[in-house]
Image 1 (cartoon, each protein chain N blue to C red):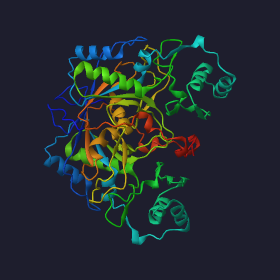
Image 2: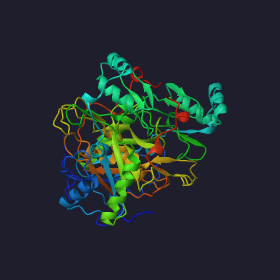
Image 3: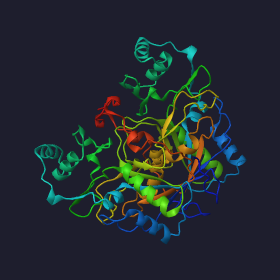
Length: 259
Length: 259
C-alpha cells in the first residue's frame, strides 16, 4: 500500500512536523489521548500515510516503567562493575536486570535487552526521569506501537503508522542517533531486490532499514533537550506494511560477529 | 551561526527536496557544474542554510575512482578470503588495497579505510559502476566536500553546507542506512552538554551525530535504485559549523571495544 501524500506541496518532498507543547506524561497516563488532544490544540490534521514517531521516554512514562532508587539493592555483580568504572551501582543493577546478555563492561555497559536491542545500560535512563528515579525502556515496544496504532486509527479514520524511537550510541561511530525500537503499520525494511542499478543491471540485494531512517529524520525536532517534543509527524514518505517488526532488526546471536 | 530557514512555510519544519533528472556523471566530470545546471533546470533556488547531501557514488565517478577488473591481480590473501566465502577475488583484492586494517573475514569483509570508516569491503562497489569495473570510495570525502562547498558558495552567494553520504551496514542491526562520510560547512556533532532535561536538570553529556541523521533523512529520496537522485537538499535544519569533520566520527582504535 503506497499512499498519496502531501497534496498541498510537491508529492516528492518529505516533511518532519513537530508537535509542540506536549504535556508532561504522568505514569499510567493515556498516551493516545494526550497525542490526540495535542494534535487538536496544535490544529494539526493528520493525513493518510502520516507516520507518527514517538520518543520511547513518553511511552515508558505512560507505561509506568519507572523505578525508585530506594527500591533497588545492587547485587555483587553490579557493585563490581560500578566500582571498576565509577558508575552508579543502582543504574548498573537495573541495566543487568533489564538484560539477557552482557557484552562489554569496560567504560561502558553494553547489554542485550529482552527484545534483542544491543545498547548501553539496557537503555535505562536517569535523565528525563523524575528525581531519584530511573526510566526503563518500554517492555515490548512493538506491541505498544501496535496498540497505539489501532487506537489512533480508530479515532481519526486515517491510515497511519507508528514508530517508537530511542537515542542510542554506535560501536564505531561517535555521537548517538535516534533508532526505531518499535513499529506498527510500517515494514522495518525496504528491499531493493530485483530493482535495477544506475546501469540497468538487477541489484543482487539491498535492504534498507527504513524505520531507523525515519526515526533519525524525527530526531532533530524531538531531540533538543528540555524542549518537550516527544511526538513528530513524518509526512510524504512512501512505505508499505509487513509482518516484520522492529524486533526483527536485531541480528540473532549466531549472526553477530562482534559479540 | 543559526540560519533563518524555510520562509515560505513553518520555520520549524524540516524538508528533504530531491533534485530530479541528475545526468550520468562521467569520470573526471565537474560535479559542481552538473549540480548547478541541474538546480537551474529544476528551477530550484537555493536558500541560505540549505544542506546539500551528495551520494558518494557520484563523487567517486567524478573523481575517477574507477578500477577495471582487468587491471587487478588478486593477491594470495585475497584469493584465500574469496575462496572461503565464495567472494569475487578482485572485489576482495580491491577491498584489501583500500584498507588499513581487516576486522572480520567470515561471511563479510569488514575493514577500516584510510579515513577511519569501518565498513564492508572498504566500501568498494560493483553495483552502480560501469560493467567490469569497480567503484572505490572517494579518497578524502571531507576534502571533496570542502572543495565543492567553496565552489557552490562562490557561484550562488548563499551560505550552504555539504554532506557526502554512503550506504552502510551495521554490526547489530540488519538493513543498511545512509551515513555521512564527508562534510563541510556543518559540524558533525551537536552537543547538548549544559542543556536541561525534561525535569530542568542539566544534562551531563549528550552528543548527537547530526550529519549521520541528515544523511539518513536524504536516503529515502536518493536511495531508490536506478532512480538517479544522487543529490538532495535538506532545508529547515538549524546547524552550526565547526573545525571537526566526518573523519572525527570514527572512533580511534584504542576506544574500539569490538575490534
